[in-house]
Image (cartoon, rainbow, N blue to C red):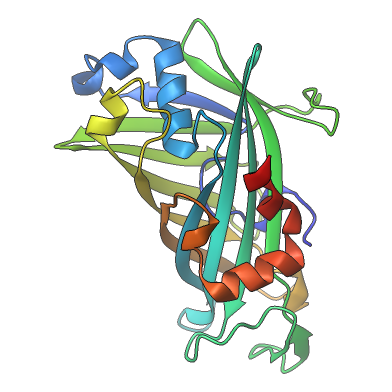
Length: 275
């Protein structure tokens, strides 16, 4: 398991530790944006389920190597799931989020997790490791309309670490609601670090305040350092992750290959469905 730090690559914008919400003026008259709490509830209903049911976000995409001297090269096809579970508390909304990426051969689709793989840049044989990262966050909202999310420790209490910042832009497009976001990271060189994503939800479901969950799809791009198992921390270049996926009803909609990997690497997440 990769150490759970934000720099080690998570696809998806749902596990933010803080968010400042910005709405386009044309959308401000929407009932679900009339109060800060309604905006928070909309965000949580899109990301998860207020009844506490698990919400796996299944996605497919690629990890692309970008170097100074060659055209971008697809290293891996990726199949991933970011699972979210919501708990409504008296002091806010707690959200658990954990993602596992299953790396696959870009041509054959064969699962590579736990298997030897010849690194095209170094010629070395590396053992492929899934990308796993997770967090537990307590979301609240200020009177000014800013969503705040404190990372939680094992005791369920907020940690002292400063929150991340995530700016969200809500836009109504016909019968859809789009939530575009980008996360701010500290300046790091020479490797860029950035995350951009857009979630598209059903507007009719968003407007139904009694609905505890909203169906949605998403696309995201993440720029990050090389995965540690590649064993090339000093090689010039970086990885670009691209992913497109959707929110699922439960684990039944995941592929047999992924469920097999989940039982091996993240059995704790599969247990969330029974909590």
